Image (cartoon, one colour):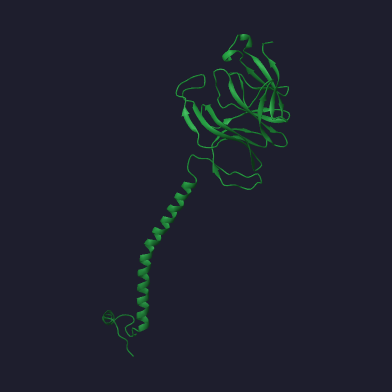
Length: 272
């Protein structure tokens, strides 16, 4: 039985298939082929647009999670397990053989330039003010030591300040001087990291009738350890001034980890 043929087939009497009937099955295959080709041509542009959108979304997500100029730190709990990553500002740090003592800003710091030269620093020096947490990190753990509230750093740059490390028989002692210059006496904090245990504590400065969290030393001098004692040089007299014979006065402190203190054992008021 002959099947109905389209007009173009009648005009192609000399074609290679002129004696073969154009059956319903052949018509169906042609129609399916044309339909699928049309759908493919429509889907391709949408597919390209979709893939581009996915790539843009992933890029924006990465930029949000890892912004430029911030430091992301992976902290660990006391049990050794990881806690969520946080972005923190390390204002000062000191390194032992096993770990690192860090002074970290708790919230956003107030940062300004001094604006004018003085005995506290140059006009371009930076002032950092805020609350700070002191912590000791070693072997995948982090231990909070103390919080220093309303503290002001004055330093030439925004880089983390390197604390002074002093060797003692029982521990490494770290001296934190938030302001590197002063008119009369540079204020200091002291921290100890005990050998062996790795226990970190803040040290108090204990004298005959007082106990305080800070002490001081004379600008232009250095902190030293002599006979396992901390030696601080200071200017004596009202307002930090006096006659030349007092200019190199010394105070010597013995480390006492049982009391978490630097205990003054000798005061030398005059030059020898």
